[in-house]
Amino acid sequence: MRFSIDHKSAVPLHAQVEELVRQMIKLPEYQNKAFLPNETSLAKQLGISRNTVRQALNKLVYEGLLIRKKGVGTRVADQNVNTRAHNWLSFSQEMKASGIEIINFDLKVSWVETDDSISQFFDIPVGKEIIKLERLRGRAEYPFVYFISYFHPRVGLTGKEDFTRPLYEILEKDCSVVVKLSKEEISSELAGAEIGKILNIDPSRPILKRKRFVFDPGGRPVEYNFGYYRADSFTYTIESEREI
Image (cartoon, rainbow, N blue to C red; front, side, top):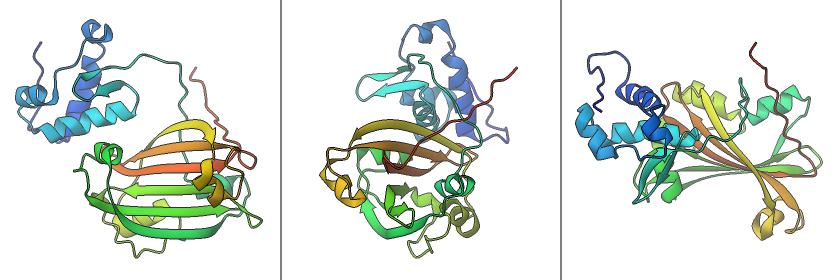
């Protein structure tokens, strides 16, 4: 089957490819776990760059619609039961809505080289230097969450920003970057020696780990974030509304 996009359209090419693939994966052949055409094949067929195809596929991978295995291929993910929460908030907004005053116990900004997972999400070469932001935050009595954020070089952060301000306010006002979509993965694990020391808890204590993948209105990745929460001090609540 042949597919095409409109090169004269005002809609960005990667957005058109994303929508095209969304339609493709509804076809019976791909619902039966057949592999999608590879990036090179799709790029040639559509007359666009491989990077544009990869950007669209990455978005769908991080939405959980596709599964990609290196050296094997990309196929439709198994359909699991899941919930989606709308109008997601930044951590500062979440805490403000709960009437909790948050302070920063420690804040560190550095330039680091990307590893495989971060490079794949941002679609940039492994080893490229990007900004890493670490924040230890909590109530006045003690810290209960440790955040690590990485940012796409396109965002334009210099590392000299005042990161005591709300993060997404900095991105919007200082960098003209608006964040729109957040995909999150939540799991539990033992704190371990490093995180236990940072949060001042026993390494054998459980913690809540939240991964957050943040995109701009065009579907481009902006932030790759890890949050480690003390399980005895934080409850993650999801409120959703059923469409009727």
